Image 1: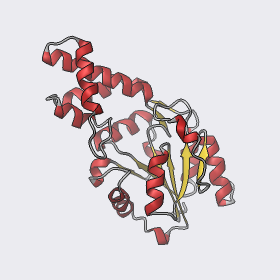
Image 2: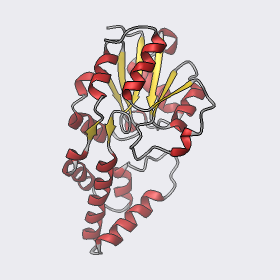
Image 3: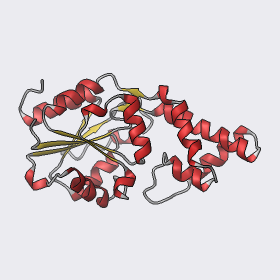
Length: 236
């Protein structure tokens, strides 16, 4: 396998459709909060949503460990919420073939803003663990993808020195993250996967088409075609 190419790939909204899953996890935690405080479920959800909406620098809204801790709930609550709703995590139809074909080209690294427990859980449920070489979680590197420290640490962890790799790709569904990484590592090649139905898709990004160095595609099949064209080679 050629390791002179490395693909850094976002999980949620690129490989996995987690939209319904996150809604139900939130609902589960809200109900548990209501039981804990002996209040009605609607009030429990209101308190939880208010906590999530509070601005915290770099904080992923789906860091349920952080949110539950702030509300006085134990880790067992948010973990149980994940397990109870695991059947609502769906791979996009083209995910498996996409990963199999990329794996023939180089190293595959999943990059995530979530915790190690949640990342391992989602990868296990989705059944893609054997197709990736490395996984990077927020607590692995004590930073978020929108921070340079995340990428500095991620590159060290997976043994990627930019100058020693022919091609480095970052495949992501949030354009604001791509733009930040592009400032720090302009030599990477950026593919913005829109995944039309995902909850994180911001319609305003469709207007932002000035930066031609960011390749925008609708789905993973289109992403694969773009990579093939960039590399001027067949992906079998």
